[in-house]
Length: 147
Image (cartoon, rainbow, N blue to C red; front, top):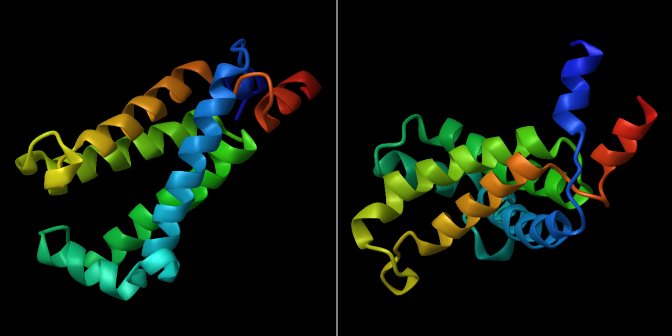
């Protein structure tokens, strides 16, 4: 990987706004990933999540649960740290598109009907972070200043 590509990946001229988005979304994504991966916070862990994913047609279920849980948990951690924000945000955005289309779209917009409004909000935050980068307070900015 050349230095110019790495610079474009981690550089950010954004101010403080991404910090608020990163911290809130990072905590939410990490918690949802922990439910899928570890069964924390009332989740079903990999096996239960994998069985549910297989039951809705996301096969193989265990692999899909691992990918979704890993994206959410480690992507959320990356958001909190401000590390490799753009690739993490893109992965999280794709994860939200899959969740919206595979689970929520048929239920309409509102969360009260298991709709897609929450997933859409997280998708919008992820896209915004993919565009803006980490902002002022993040490890990406520190790395960019050292290279």
